[in-house]
Image (cartoon, rainbow, N blue to C red; front, top):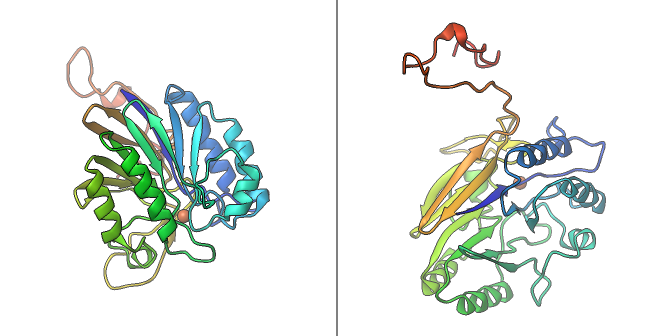
Length: 285
Ligand SMILES: [Fe+2]
């Protein structure tokens, strides 16, 4: 069994700035503390981009300080809010490909984790250029016969929220052809959408998570409006064993009490009088 942590879109701003009336540094620190407390046995964490909101070196330095407290190693990807040079100046150990894109392969006991760089400076939409496709093709050729797990910021498909679909990764057919040729791509983990979304694309299971700071509202239908929300953040705890992948969503700011769900004596639900009161925000729902 392999266990890793998926974190996405921390959108760090330099201290003491806030973003969307929240403190992204505090939020990521809370996630890290929760991971250290409950999941320090994970092999590593993967952060799928939008590490910094405006890509300043100061934001990456703050991110580096925060990640220094993480008890497990972490692998970083860039997203459309990132600035590649500033990121590289602060995280020089993160591998790059021969063209300077933040793309690399992490071998694991369950297969190869392939990290893709889908960002283009000044653009919110994803881009995967010819050079990056050439890199990916070479990696997938070298990984023939091995299971592959893909990580990228922009999904190559629509999720039904127009404002996000406008900035998805183009060239979906080209990417799909490449993955199909490899023949054993087990899962795609992505960021960008600031929501928990599960599904499948061209037969490959996919999932995204809420960001650790703010979220994007569920505005389906005929609107291009992108709403920010204060819906709750989360990270993912991913368990992979043989042919099985499970992603558990962890609300790391949840402080509601835990209690035995089965009363040992009656073997039924516990008596209400013996339970702690639910959080005020949930009481009466
Ligand atoms: Fe983001």
